Length: 434
Ligand SMILES: NC(=O)c1ccc[n+]([C@@H]2O[C@H](COP(=O)([O-])OP(=O)(O)OC[C@H]3O[C@@H](n4cnc5c(N)ncnc54)[C@H](O)[C@@H]3O)[C@@H](O)[C@H]2O)c1
Image (cartoon, rainbow, N blue to C red; front, side, top):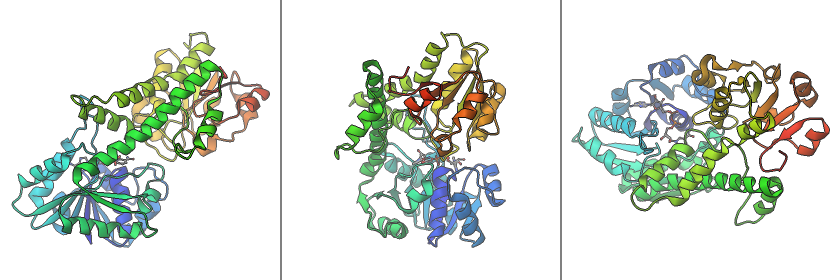
């Protein structure tokens, strides 16, 4: 099938590439000419495991191409995916300006029936709005299918190729069938393609993210209580995870959730329910998360007696989670900004997010080429992202390089007993080690 994917970011590039991998001819479109030029020169602008190789292979086999020309892409395609950003608007609501521009652009370029698929995360009712925007620009028939994306950054290709489920919403049987066919190669092990009305499909995406964010804030709140009551959240986690009604996933305490989705999607839900019903639980989820992003710096302040001026801190991990370079709404930003505003200096290292960090902090922090290099002359190490390479470091080397053997572990990667035996002052989350 001939497909166009509009928006070549984490979702669009992965979706387009995976659809090409299963034999479709795909044109990925973006308004960012620099991004398209980079992709046309064989480079992939984001870090996502397995993606680069797949992009190269499908480009070489001429199933995948990149363009800024929406009109041609629409004319050549029967199905067009909208995968543009839906960032947070001024009131916390989702900003649909890019979706609107894309829908109208598709409408203007159409020269016959088209299936328009919404992959961007959009508020409930957006499918109807898209229909209106397209209809304002064309008299040709079209159908809109809502197809929220559930992939996780860091495992996006794997998730897209083997989704737990695919959700399709809409009321046009022919269009739903066409999109279903596109997904069939990815659900051969029997995972379901669920077909429903578009509003339920749109809501499913927000509900999934809200549940996941709630689990994180839940365990973070429990971790706070553990600290004040002398319990160990690691033990508590193990105990509750064995209850099959609860399960082990997504209940790891840390420095809060971040990334391009949870924060903005939770705020969009709060905004969707601004009048009725008030999103009482989600407001609390967000409040817990904002508090959690500050917990490590509070521990730093307590340890150093409140005065951080002139002290240098080493940071390991800037991306909001491992295996991505994405720093959107990352807790590391809150942590680093607090340290800087207290007069401290920061030396940071991340395996993939250094480029993104430079866009955010510029010259305000120092960037280390390797993890150990960040430690030189620092009074403490703060671990903010659970990259695998930080899990088993050479502690004697850390001790040698730091001015003082102090570690603030925002991801509970290390064993408090071992670290104390090695002579470190060690602080983590919810383990009463402060
Ligand atoms: N990143 C994730 O993990 C993830 C997961 C599921 C769903 N989503 C949702 O998918 C959508 C896209 O997210 P993302 O992370 O890929 O965003 P992104 O910011 O990485 O990419 C969006 C792309 O759209 C392009 N764009 C904007 N307006 C355009 C236009 N008018 N025409 C063509 N291109 C345009 C931008 O230049 C950018 O390259 C969002 O709604 C997001 O909430 C994201």
